[in-house]
Amino acid sequence: MGHARKTVRRPGRRSDPGMIEAMIRVDHAGEYGAVQIYQGQRAVFGERPEKARITSQLMHMQADEQHHLTAFDTHIRNGLSRPTLLSPLWNLAGFVLGVGTALMGEKAAHACTEAVEDTIEDHYNSQIEQLTLAGESRLCTQFTRFRDEEIAHKNLAVEEGAKDAAGYPVLSAAIKAGCHMAIRISKRI
Image (cartoon, rainbow, N blue to C red; front, top):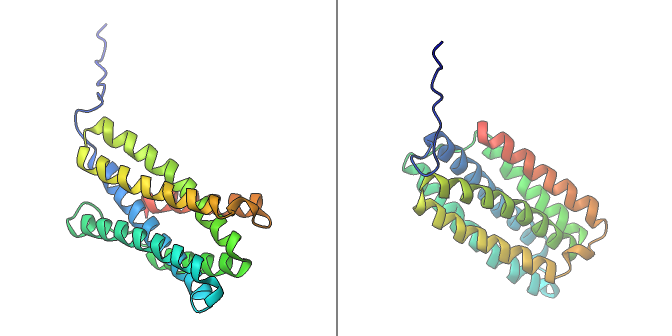
């Protein structure tokens, strides 16, 4: 009786191009959605002088997200992935989420940031672990930097009272569920 040899893939040997393609597609979609969230929030707060402080914070966070999006656009142009086919949906959903939470008030807008960034922090952590095992140091370094900027956004949102928003537990759970769904769908489509 011969035993079939089982091939075991060892960490750090070679990256899976499909894994990287899915990561870039999902992260591109996420950064695109984040830019839209901040645009929606700024559409509500932007012209109101009494909202100058939060508008300035949103502009800074949107600039970070735009920087991330530009990096993922470059990866897509270089052929590492393609954008999700659902980009128009994420565009609309992000903007609507931004407008909706801003209409609920500053704390709800910050709760949106906290919920999204908390989800994205976990998502990037998982990707960083996979990239480390695959020996993809360049992408790992870039994703680590982006994750750290997302954590800074989350921390700012918490400092600004995100968890004091009316209905915070429900609002946060709903936003996180939406983020998880978008991640799962964008991996494939």
